Amino acid sequence: MAYNLIKINEVLHRCAISKATLYRLLEEKNFPSQVVLSKRAIAFYEHEIEDWIKTRMRRQ
Image (cartoon, rainbow, N blue to C red; front, top):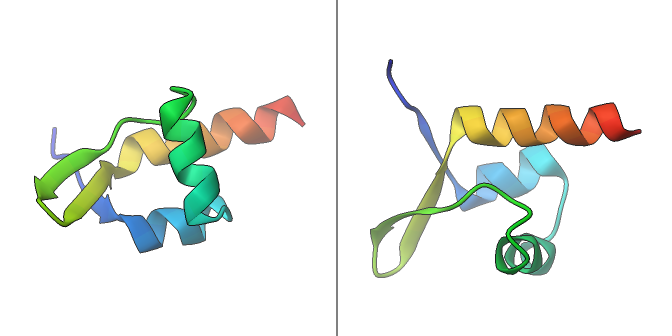
C-alpha cells in the first residue's frame, strides 16, 4: 500500500482549521501524528487526515 504525504498547508485547507488549532489538536492527541521530513518541514499521511475528517463529519 502506498502512503501519500500531504504538507501542512494542504491539511489546513482540507480540514478548514487554523495552524493554532492544528497544533492544539496535536498537543491534545486529537489529530493524526505528523511525519517529520526535516528540521523545518512536516507532513501528514493523507489517509489519516481523510479518516479524521470523516470521523468529524459523523459526529455532526
